[in-house]
Image 1 (cartoon, protein in one colour):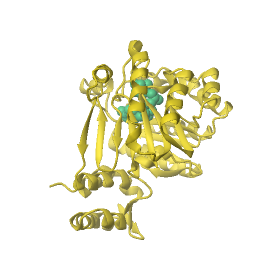
Image 2 (cartoon, protein in one colour):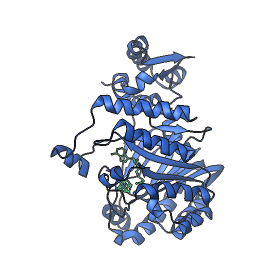
Image 3 (cartoon, protein in one colour):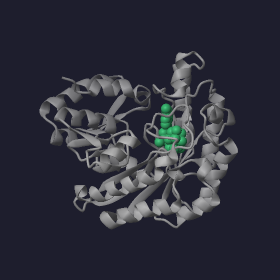
Image 4 (cartoon, helix red, strand yellow):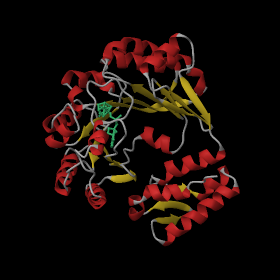
Length: 376
Ligand SMILES: C[S@@+](CC[C@H](N)C(=O)[O-])C[C@H]1O[C@@H](n2cnc3c(N)ncnc32)[C@H](O)[C@@H]1O
Ligand code: SF4
């Protein structure tokens, strides 16, 4: 089973924290759709009839597309790829795009999951992030999607925002729980170079939250969501009743996927490919029949390090049996010896030969992963 990711590189405005590839110039939208469909068709043999388990429209802002445009892309995929019976099809959507008519349109397609970029239910936070919606629209968009009959809804939240108090964050989490969604992704704010927030930070206009407060916010998130019946299945992802994001789970399980559109990545166990992060170059190269991507063949060391990054962050952890079956002895030994001190400090625990992070481990996951890496 494999996945398909489609990158829609347009946003009406840019959010102050975001470094995903996007453009606010919609002038090339028609050309982009033509090129995207060409890529979808041209790469159909890469999967050799392998069934598609998930399709994910990400961005940018996929909800800026018209329903007919989304339907067109999906029917082309249906024509050229083998969709699994139970395929999960997610559309990332911004709250301000979720009108009644758009949602009704979504229901007429084979999309069966929405990932709504709520980010916060607090007007001050939303304004400071340069989101286009306010808290009332955040709530209404989720209710409207539920009312339209979409039964698998995920929302994104960001915490660790400048000046965000623990009480502010608690109100956000409580509001999210009250809305009865199936899935919540909650990310700690990262300051990426090139974003407005990064610039503000450099100029001293905003300050990073103290580490202790970030940690308090993370703990509050874990406790509140656990109490509300959500299962944490990855550092930032929480699901009710096993409504995991099948698409993301497949990434973490290192299953094969094809990524279409500028900046989209693809993976086939041994090779990683990434399309150019420029719509102009994507269109030009395609027109001139030149490559619009780069590839990297993954060494055994790369594959081992990838396994560390993708598995340790999930509730399925790192399996010694998998390591032994797939990697040379030196990698297995390296893993066991580096993991030892974290077993002693109880940041890791091991059951049935599977290594997992404890709650304390989750707080220092980056450091643990770094030490488990094999670097020569
Ligand atoms: C591709 S982005 C956004 C999709 C959609 N356009 C939207 O705005 O809702 C996916 C998610 O990544 C998260 N994200 C993006 N940049 C982030 C950052 N710098 N720090 C933390 N989370 C971030 C946001 O929660 C966002 O919804
Ligand atoms: S968060 Fe979403 S809407 Fe905002 S700039 Fe990034 S991709 Fe665009």
